[in-house]
Length: 324
Image (cartoon, rainbow, N blue to C red; front, side, top):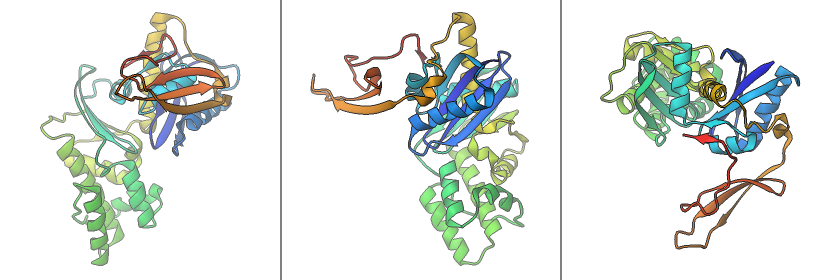
């Protein structure tokens, strides 16, 4: 078997996708990063290897997410791309002609407007926690509701309660106030979903023409309450793709496939990466008044990469890796 791998390393989750040379998804892995991106990447690779078998040949690898450079160093990626690009590529693959991509992950959210398969506009929120997966996790835990049941509970509400959703702190305070007033839990949960969708559209979608077809992806797309809230707010059917939770990794794999068809070879370091001993360290450069903090990744005594300097003095990277 021959496959292309895509890795999406974020602050909350690390996802790995394997596609065949036709771009069809063969295996997916979704796991929590838990503050250990190197360990999560190695665990994800091992899980994919166990599923595919030792006779599987990796033809190319792409990485994305906030930890894309780190992951690229560890695995030997062929292409490294930002989340906007990879999510757009994957959405257009799943739904050709898609015009709007709504993506809400664990720590950030983004909106991508497309035309003829190309990105024409986008916006990204990495500041406010309201509406992200981590905020929903927090509220579910506070209300003692399993996160898997959070969305379905919202669907059972007879009427949603108005919740202030412009800020995570205000939203939580308003939810507590509504609980103290005796409103049903399902009504409060439904109101929270509507508030978070309003916040998303007022911030990221402000001034933008949101046209169908609309795709909703990212971990929060698993929440049925959020899906219904988007359907009602946009007055159109919002499509949730089959692999909504790993679309960034899928896009990275598809980009690697495109590159390898032109380049002809891969920089992948092999499945043994899953068992490697990697160490992250840092030091301060005293070469000039900037006093840059240099981040270093090493495997044993071999330095794989360094970054963080403004002048390029300390930079060491795997050759042939294309970043963007």
